[in-house]
Image 1 (cartoon, one colour):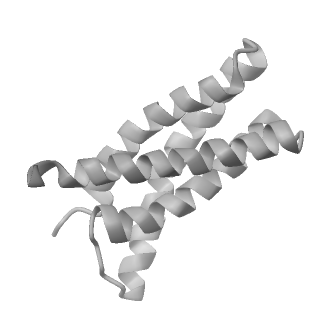
Image 2 (cartoon, helix red, strand yellow):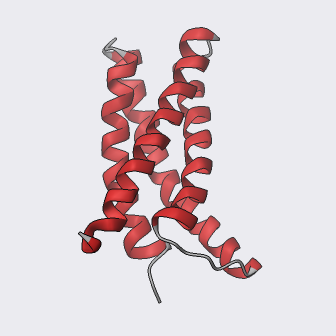
Length: 130
């Protein structure tokens, strides 16, 4: 079980990040009437910020606080997440704006795809044990 603790913890906090993402998206898109693409981008930013801190301190138990280390991790984290953010925006544009599919269902599917890619990037590159 200890072998998979990082992954299981990541799943819990990944689920919470998904809630941040989907909740933010719902408030922006459905409640505030902001466009799909802008709502997706802002929800992504909120979720990524939440995910950085939970991944660093809780999931991968990386306690290093040297300014250079945190700056490097933050830069790598946002860079890696930027690529999945682009995937999210393109996926949401195609599924919601082009095909008129359910926004929340599409957002959930997009979050699953991102979660897999983001876990691998965090585990293997950004917060790896040195």
